[in-house]
Image (cartoon, rainbow, N blue to C red; front, side):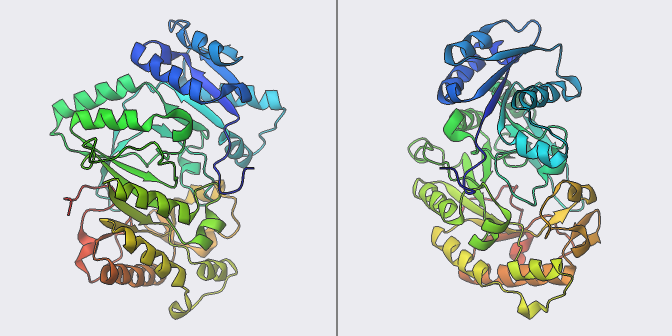
Length: 411
């Protein structure tokens, strides 16, 4: 039986016929379709001109499918067509953006991306910048504070890019233009392990990156690590760094439905540490329950009354895994994000405008970072960073190291 700890179930699958134009990609599609158990899902093929019937034939071997013929994908017409088709089948009205988000998390779109997988997140006053590898968009988790609700508002369904021949080409071109050994963040636009039990893509991606001489940062809220091989036996110790976005149990239960429980994330991290991988953690956003409840009721709370015991307990557990880095962050939002959030506690008027974003008042943020950062430094002694909060100035040097998305030398 599904619970709030499980991702939203995949009920609908849409497939892009462009995935059949390269034999390498078609093999990946065939493997993915076989493992998806399509007989229990509604299936749609988006048939584009000059792409042939290879994907159609692969789909028909697995399940019945319906077909929509489209001219191109401009202006997200493919996304609009997918939503319209499945919503009509289910007689499901999508009257609000919240309806669309909830429905979209049950749709998996196997897509052939036409742009580059590799994109630069440019540096700005908040962030030193990093390289993003966009393996897909959105995820089947239900975090109530998720910034992707704004970023993906035009395309709020779960997309996986299966044309890995393009990724291979992008990596080859990238390595020619730049020195190899770049760290690519795979957790900026999606959860890279979200659909791993259904698609079995991750290890294929890792091998492409390993062959290119670069590195991956896998940021996840998932515990889908069963298929990940021993690092040392496959020479992967310096290819992949696994990082978990994590919070205390009460925060996960309140704000992060449809994600792996805190305990399961810790067990997955411990498992991969034992397999020889480098491990990082990201405690972000820090949202102490009593602080958020008080602010939502219009009440201020003395700093000394903020209950951080659950965070200290969490850091105690992280110490047992011996991560190389822990990053801290607090909730931050562009003004428009609040139009896409349904949680009544996370409302604009409990935050203050700081730069372009709304954040907790600075005194609260400083207190949270200082208390948790000092506790971590004293207990673990690992690298520590703050995410996208440049106005915070704290007296220990570990906050000055490159942040979560950047490379550091292995200890």
